[in-house]
Image (cartoon, rainbow, N blue to C red; front, side, top):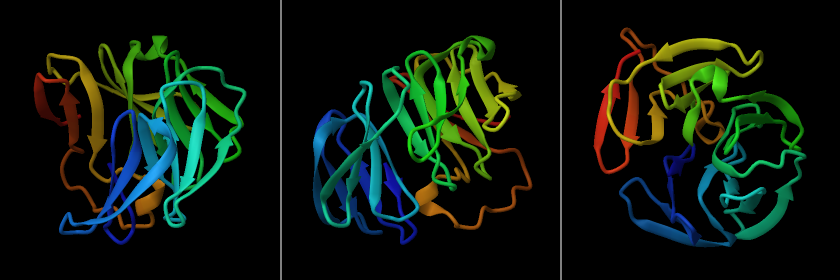
Length: 206
């Protein structure tokens, strides 16, 4: 699920061929049919282009404004792709089976974050940190905050939540579609919401 600058909500259907557009009151505005069943998706800053993965080796694109299939992102990375985020500068952060990848808008590999130094990540759960220069990666041994430019480990957090962590949401997530929404000044710790498959939902303070 992602939202645009106007507050519209886009809801996917895992392994389905539709994305639903809702208004602020959750009324259905449109049902968009895409060419390939999607696993994860994100909306670009142009408010129209959806980038989505299907759990295999391609990153697909679709124009949700005109309901038109676009060309795939061409990349030399041969990993299978899962969760995807579009940064405010248009670059792509995508979780693969073997690593997390930072790609340019044309699919060129900028950086690669191997899971082993970060405790090995699981299920490809990622989220952009406020500011868009860092990415949170869910690891089997906790959460890892990694700098996109350098690949350096910035912070480690033990969520102390049992279960298989499937996704992560960060307050102030700097994804492209909602930018440039002002990021609130945080007087306390950043809160991370962890969705743990069928087990629990927890709030974590780094």
